[in-house]
Length: 353
Image (cartoon, rainbow, N blue to C red; front, side, top):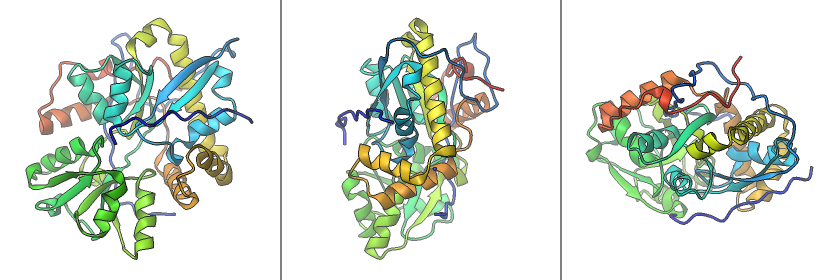
């Protein structure tokens, strides 16, 4: 789990209803003091005509390539990155901690993280990066179980399985403490994803982490195959707010080559929006299965359907969400910082109406 998967290069040739009892959101964002924060959703940035030379840009993901990242594949396939002078390289990952590690070590200049992890790194002054836009502007994290969960108190005395680099290791205790539950009464079990959900079905663990449009489809299909029934409870039902995925860039790249950052942001937003609005399911599934053959077509279909349901208006980061999340982290995790919300994200690279 700790090892970084090999980069996936996609060369360009040429959008279940599900009972979701919530979802999480993290909170975050910030802009340099000179950059005004925006509260309204962003449109695709205006960018210059295609540069004469392509620039290779690795983008570190916070998870493996699946249908929730299909917009990037669609953008590569349709030339949206090339028209911005960007040769995008998608680098699969295994969690936001690992994504931050890679960008901190300057192995990549752009990465995708959940908001909570990014804010924690910034609060500890552990990352020279800035949040530039949202990719999934809605909650995805939650708890999957073989029985309904009606309140946070029902987790006390139970075990909860997750993976080593998961954001849930930090998020679940925050949510529990915010709801007056001693987080130490929940046993967090770290395990490989290959045994996580089988362990749930075999009742070796009581609960497990799952994400809408991520691991949840796999859990649903696995439960169906095993003749089990599963229930999903989103952490947003218990008060957590935020963004599931944001795009961050290194400070030195923002300072030295703002045009590149603007062009990357433009291509990501255009790819995400047009894939959801214009692409057929068959086109998306074919792109995903070509990039990651280990994903089954039914799983990819569920991921894509859920992704379209949960994503609304990706783009500009809302400073109110960032401020609320900082307050939440300070109250529940005693993680305090003198940084103001406007210092944690920028709206410089997204155009607002």
